[in-house]
Length: 475
Image (cartoon, rainbow, N blue to C red; front, side):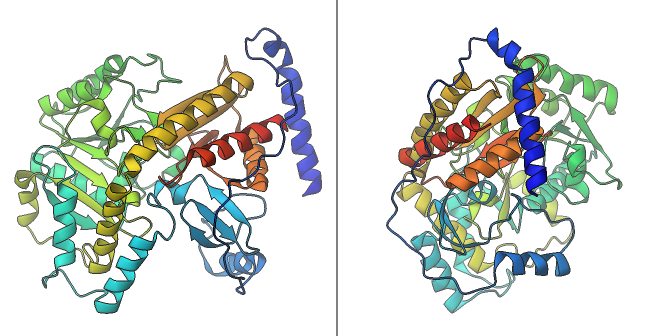
């Protein structure tokens, strides 16, 4: 491992030497002063001593009994044993700032006392029965959820995950329109089941199985796309696809307002209104995948699609809906919802009283603690800090996103936008050693995904940015 690390370090320094001539002609200055190791903000909690299996023991058991498809971050994977709000603790009691939030899932904060209390109270009374009996938990949460959506989006179907929600949404669109063809955007991620794998448009996440009836349109990528930030030009490809790739009618169009797995890629302005218009003209329904961008994460709006001035026909959600509890949902109009009455549709765990109680409690916390406002204020501040690092380090090609859904793309050449696939791993390791955990994504795996709990503070934002600054200075 030491030899591999030395080899990697030489590769880094070699790349930096090769790019020095480019830097000499760049406006971006070299860092002048040495960057000191940042200090983590104080936090009034220390976990009790951990007495469970070690990281090595867990890793051994995981390799022996769990799927070989499971992977982990970091050369020496962390054994995370406890979480408290925006912090995580490993087996030694060391505290880490969570900049990944369980992949944009823990919106309220780890083990938020209100959510925990609601779950424990419900678990003591009733964990599961069936939706064939009445229980107020599912109805109360459905009512509260519907109140957060615009227009006539009032009917809720509960599921267990985002993949399941997107599968159901695609089926509803096909049933309602009587048309099998669905359009999604290149670079999208919508799930890994039979239908959603078809809608997912990255080869990294697609197996060679039958994926019928899905067409992938041009990605309105503001960083790498041919039309820059001109969303309407990209949307013309939707109309071309309808005209030349289908019978002229489509069942639906599915899009994330901010592509999460795709590298925190916010769709170009003007794209969704034009795309929705073309799809509806062809008889299709418009589906907003809010699995990652929903529930106040983007700060400026509660739902990602709202920033684009559109109202979908169907909205899917998961992750932040339950603050870590397995829960998803599909919300649509009463008219569209009727299609599922033509046959029997049933979901054993969808609407489980324990999960819907957790979801309702999480929604109340978002509102009571004004976490959408906090995501906007702190997220805007953090984006400014990260943008200042772009001016300092040539390796940062782009800083994007909104609220607390931010992306930092690393490149070895700003002009060619060459993905810095190896360098990003080095920086992640350095940041982890300092005490900051963040994710990575994008098709090339060269984009930092920063999606922390929405209780993040400006002090946390400073620590994260300082940790990235320090780690980049060590390249």
